[in-house]
Image (cartoon, rainbow, N blue to C red; front, side, top):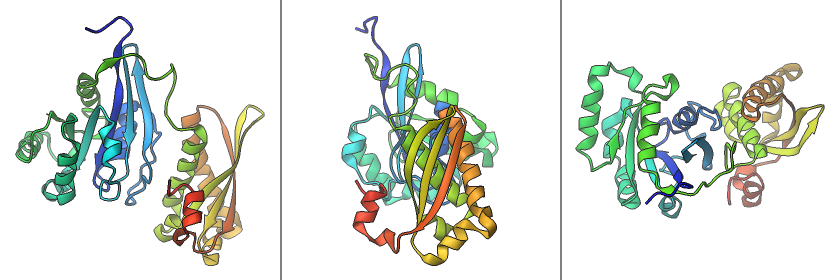
Amino acid sequence: MKSDSEIKAGYVAIAGLTNSGKSTLLNALTARNISPSHSHKGTTRVPISSIYMNDDTQMCFIDTPPIEVFDDAEFFSGMDVICLTINSTDLSSQLKSARVREFIYEIAPIPLIVAPTFIDYFPRILHSAFINQIAMFGSFQEIVPVCPPCLESTYRLRKIIAGYIPSRGRLFPDRCTSLHSERFLVSEQIRISLFSVLPSDVATSTAVQIEEFSIRDEKRYVRANLHVAKHSNKGVVIGRKGAMLQNIADIAAEGASRILERPMYLDLWVKVRESWPGNQSDLIEFGYVC
């Protein structure tokens, strides 16, 4: 029996193959742009959480790295519900993927809801065909086609997910938006901004390290170092007369300010850490390895 102090409260993992729309879906479900999303493959490198709550519901949605690289059965076993995103523009091959089939087997018996994404590419009359095709590949609790950028069916998906969340005491304090620190979330915004303006090989090999995270004149002040793996990349990141670096700072500050809900001043510096992607201690220092 549900007591007066119990609400729907739990954890929901959003999983899927590379570029299946996981990050965009998390942001749409929680109405908060916490998880950086970009067309570049694999921009989500660690699980990122965003909490949705109202008077009778608390759901912590967790955006996960692509299941091709994030093979952590123990992590998923702690979830109350799993939402599997499938790219509708590549539906057949994703459903036939050995990794998808393996993942579905691994997470049983956790409730699994499938969310075909990018449905805006197709007329609505085809959506039922997507549902039928997916249903032939397994027994799922629900199949809900969605278009996160235009918010189509995301409210319905959130309501369906809540139906599978157990009733228990509150898990999070009021106004809690994420399990992560603001420092971490700002760091991720800086990292994803690199992909907006830099060549992909330079962006991928540039690490973000925050040195100062303080309040000055009622503004959040952030000083961060961008560590490039080659000397030649330093000039690329800085740009002519610092124009590229300023562009990166403007994009990152805009995104981070929305998350922090306060103005932010971002001070970026570029440093060279030769071949850091191949150095285990550097990977640990920059947060790529636990």
